[in-house]
Length: 335
Ligand code: AVJ
Image (cartoon, rainbow, N blue to C red):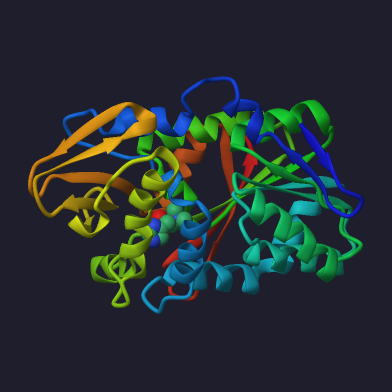
């Protein structure tokens, strides 16, 4: 489905999927996750309006170093990145999970300054975010060609495959890869690879392994914003799926496992309770102190990232670090 206003061209793929079934994908995912022995909810549902605003606040937290570190990487290396993107001639810059594109804007600026031939395709599941981004880019970089896509990553890549020829440079920033289990990240990168050709590139942001205390604090902030972000998932289920979670009776708990290099976030039930979820046609029982696993945030080493790329048909061109080497943006070429 295409929505074209005179000012903001935007492709909305999000509804095509939803209307096809009676129960929403959300309801089905929630029902499935809460019906297993170890309860779980997919972290991609964090980002409704409130969740996206809370994530913006997380990015401003002193404890949450990731965004500042990546901003430093991009600020220090944008010239070299822009030059390497452009080596094969004109290209589509595809930004998976663009959000407010704060970091990408540094690259867009630089590419514009270098007078490179490219257009910008931000992809996000949040329609509001894509509307705001398109409008802000029109103000800030009026000569830039932008076509925002609202939808899941692979819907968007599918759409691109059918609608845009030419070279592609894919951005997957912000350590979003960290949300995937090892096997999922392989499938994910292999799928991205299947849409790319010789000469195409991928720039991926990864949070690196470091002092566990620093990592732990990033997900246990003093102000409790991360807790609110995690708990908002229950508010969202209440609102959108007609559930009756007593959110006060759950608490945020996040732990770091330094052997696996993973932060795991949970919502823990403070008492025995039953929760009814109308849209899912389900009543869920919680024992006292039973937990729902809501997120993984994997931390990588550089050899791991190289190995992951290699398994998925990518070769590392350049690793860009921040000063402390706590975060890296890795530029891959199709191998
Ligand atoms: C957006 C997935 C990179 O895992 O660090 C922040 C989300 N969760 N605080 C991350 C998040 C809790 C974030 N990513």
